[in-house]
Image 1 (cartoon, rainbow, N blue to C red):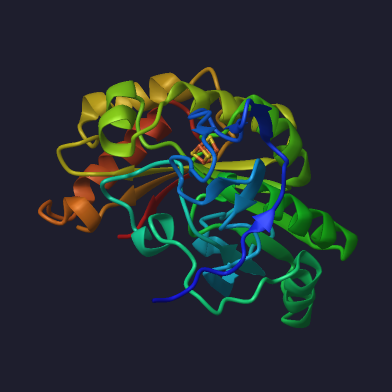
Image 2 (image 1 turned 180 degrees about the vertical axis):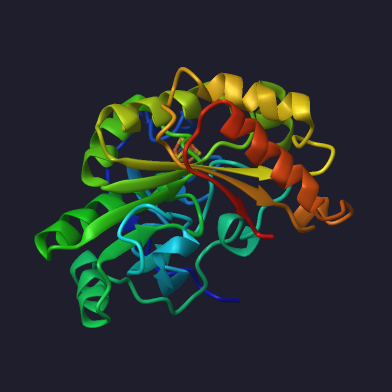
Length: 293
Ligand code: SF4
């Protein structure tokens, strides 16, 4: 049996409660009993210290076009050195990266120091580093350390996130981020509960807070047939975004392809993606993009 690598000890974002630890990185606010893990499976209480099985163990490192994040209005035409680890604070039935989001690092993995990650980015001529692939909130400490090293080397920082983060953690992480794409999955709280295992309101609050910092923001919405792609559901999403962002924020409506627990669904008909784009343009959004077509 493979041995997991030694976890990274990092007491940021936890408080002791007796011999348990309360994690306040995301709104689940898990209580980690001795030897126990949180909802994300990667943050664990080992002997009263927080041990992360995500921080420092990238499952995927890749030099990507920044447009792939997707960010179409930030450093266009450049490459971003991208990193994802393990774990997630959602359980999306449609997850595209469930090997990472629901997995744990295998044995033999080497910890990659933030400075080494940034040196690799510089060596490849990337203009930025990106925290992506799985949910960076669950490894926010590692992302912050990389972000500080990246800024020191003159690189920008990119966050691709579901936005399910507490205000306390966002106040630490977001000021270190230059551009973000938040995946706002629906305007319906029931969708978040049933499909994602999380909540909508904290996501909207995180998006509003990030916007208030004046950083570059883009929003993605994945349209899933029969789940969130009706005209009414798109209008509901736009209603919920209305007080949170202004019309200069780029919106991406993406086509779903069958995967994970929703393999039985068909791909989103392209006309549904075009209908969502048209609804957003009618509301005055200036930059509306169709994705995955
Ligand atoms: S990051 Fe979220 S899901 Fe993971 S332990 Fe902390 S509160 Fe729980």
